[in-house]
Length: 245
Image 1 (cartoon, rainbow, N blue to C red):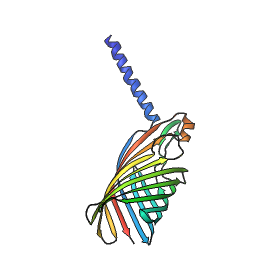
Image 2: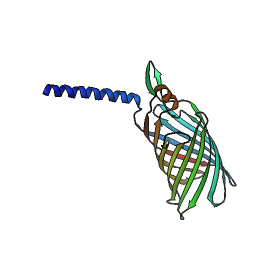
Image 3: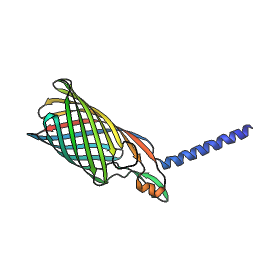
Image 4: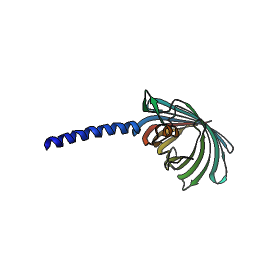
């Protein structure tokens, strides 16, 4: 009896290991990364127009993600603002597919390509007190290279702690339009502080958390005839630099 139980236990462990290995091949593993980051802005303001050149750097695993964005914004009464922007991104992480390599499907990230994004936004700010304000920004973005459309919503709070220090908290959510998955593509929060003691320069630290969702692409569904779903957690700690011309 003991020998039978022992044999059943051994077979169960072997089968469990086998199924776990198969499942690991079928579904990308959940990743958690902590990365450095830099956000740099160059502002030029004239009358009600504001032009901004933004640069973002954040290594993602072995990739060196970079993003350049140019935007033009116009301010209206009652703290409304509208803007248009164009983005050029390098080594951005996309929806990933299985690829058949040497007769086996393997998980491969589709990175390393140059991406072009075009978008517009509307922003509204509210003055809650002498040192506290809130805002809501809504983006509609078209990613030309991948032919995807996104709706981005970014509410936030800004607190002027002292005449020289400002702290801010932002939440940002991306929704992929026109897909059949009832999920946010990406969402995250970031907290930062800015020091205004230098001439024409504002700078300070920030921390950011993002949760990224990955699910079956049409190409994979057609090739493999089943679906998967996974996600990753990404933490960034870095410095924000703002220069006013």
